View 1: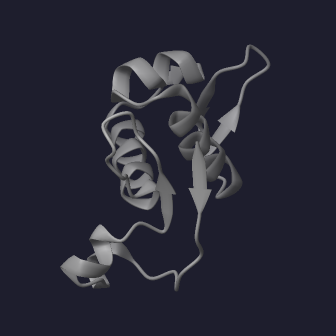
View 2 (view 1 turned 30 degrees about the horizontal axis):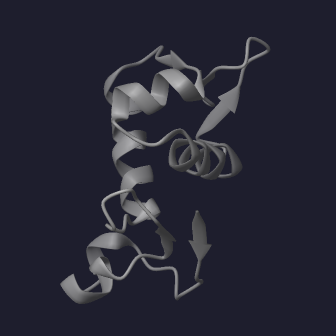
View 3 (view 1 turned 180 degrees about the vertical axis):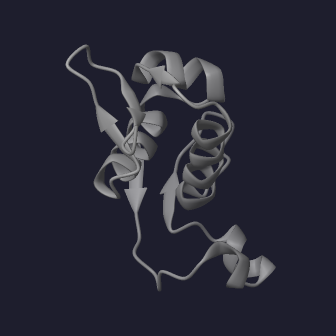
Length: 98
């Protein structure tokens, strides 16, 4: 189940600890936890930067990053919309600048 709330979009490092813990997009996790999709997207972006040529399906990315497939799809879609990732004809995502 995905619940979305929009708040001011600021870089994560400029937020206070409390603001960082109140997610921009709240994702309901099995253990009643919440995840900040912006923070997860930053982590996924860093992995793609660190591993040039990385190309993953959503299922592979979900397993690699330890994310629920629905959450992973949200993160991937966000990174595609920002032109950081692009979809291949094979249904995988890779860096958009490669």
